[in-house]
Image (cartoon, rainbow, N blue to C red):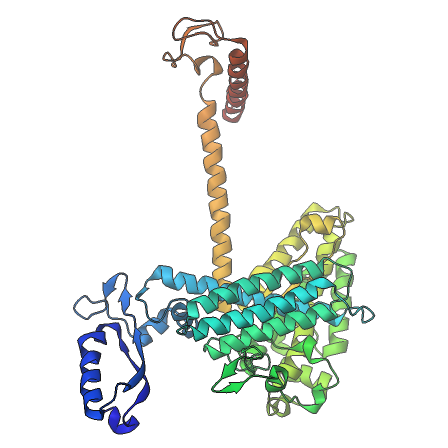
Length: 525
């Protein structure tokens, strides 16, 4: 049947590993005898089996899972990552552990793209005088060339996606380290941003080839390195192959600083949902500030004034009173309506996203200003401080999360107290991923509290025993004791050395402290 379509030979014949013998051997024998040559098939691809929790998938075992069933529990991206992280020719056992590996890898990708996006924000306000970053710039370029070649070699080696994904993971870790080093220097971010943008594009292009990332400006082009041969053609100029024609309106602004770096193509509904949620969070937060003392009222009023001046939106008004806020922003900034923007290819990326990003950052900056004031030492009202810190946490962990917005404080409490006011990171992340992060954070906090409770119980249990009783039961070690219960002779009746007595005295004193603490905690005198 295959020969009726392909003729007397074919390049690839696929099938399950169980068909190697005798099925495919018989096919070869019959076809090669019929055509009178020995090259009916050039390559066989025998894929491994899929098992479910160690068992063969079958209706009799009631473990039959359809793709539709799997998609009810996991996203298509996570299922694709599950398969990419395993060799196509090995048996894949579909269970919670294999999917957990894919979920972990997806989080690495999400965090990497989130950090890359925020690094571009830093570069947008960089000093243009400094163009050089130093030798680390060459290091990242060399690492990317090596990663491109290693991925290409892996895919040429029997399409080894598992090795390719491992190379990609290591490369992402290196880029993250590079970006952290740059944020800690006084140098310009412009060149570092170019390097990180190129690295991010390589990652997204490979993910698009694998079906994990959508088509965006950053993911367009080939991840194949220069000099590689594809379908008989040598790749000579990747920059030319990867170039994208942008609308004229965006040519005045550096594409590097406003790229949409995500595995998902932007959608109008997602932007609307995020903006409306952000405005609702900003309104709630600003109303909280207006109920406090003058300094915080001033922050709310100044922030609201700045946002209205730039974006045409009043965060002091309830969001229900705002009619299509996204269209209002587009009209204010671009002097056009949203429909004309989305008719332009990549218009959501090149025109809408940069504006939305700056608006989100303005809202995050209002909150950051409040945090800086709270930790400056000038706020002496403890109740006020606690109320506003709670409001800051609620905005980050609840209000923005519901809108699919991740806000991360890059300056901790100790940094703020030392006036190290690092800009917060903000961006769009899938709501289900954010919900998982919140649950994981709550779980870690619960485990920490439980561990603290166990440690307290353990200390109390250890402190129950009076110090004068702790050695009395160790008759296999000691034979005589003084009036405080301290051992004086070993089990053979030999007097203990001074060095040994000194060690035992330390143990005795430590137990005496624990016993005193136990008595204090129980109220016994």
